[in-house]
Image 1: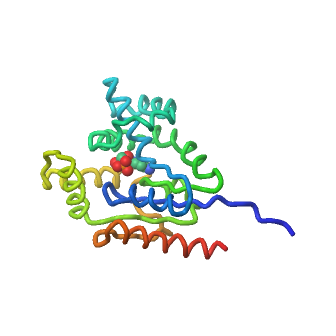
Image 2: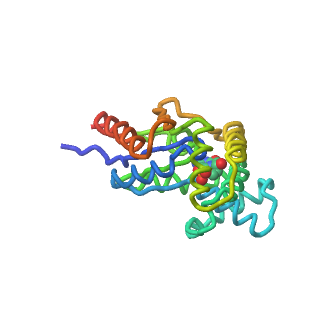
Image 3: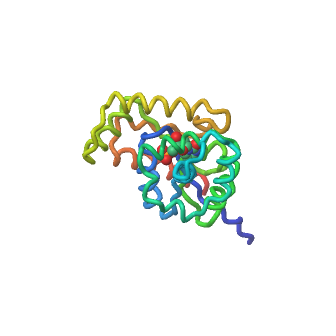
Length: 218
Ligand code: DC
């Protein structure tokens, strides 16, 4: 009897900002017993490191150099989570040099047995087009802006829903209309709209999608 070569089980979670992908990807990874990579952190770290040194984020060549020099330790910085780092990330993410430099790191993470859950914008389309499970998590801009506003208000921040809604739409626009790896669902992704789902509801829907694929894989 010959054994089929082991194929790592890869789950690609993509979608716009604040759709709940990060929370869902973490919970899914935990339930499936797989490591998780939040790929947004790669772009956030590059944006932040450049901004701290006062470099021009629109300089594609320089941003590419930062991407090639990125150290996995940089992903542990504690200043990468906020809105400001998200904005910086979205700006450096438009550069093809940056995206190209990050491909191998992400693919190597996914290829290590037993597999992985990766969340981002182009995981199912560019980074792991052969992922067994592809979920495109989305929600209306209004619902995403409302969730983000509530999160920030709960942290004691002084924010207005209208401002967050405008920022959300601006970020969607930049992510969806860039020339390289624009945000869009892979043709074989299952679209999961979380507008009317809470965290538990989104997780059980995603688990059902993953279970169906795992069964189909045999
Ligand atoms: O998921 P996030 O909010 O951490 O992402 C921050 C920015 O990084 C987002 O506006 C677009 C970019 N990004 C990307 O282009 N590709 C990815 N795989 C992940 C993030």
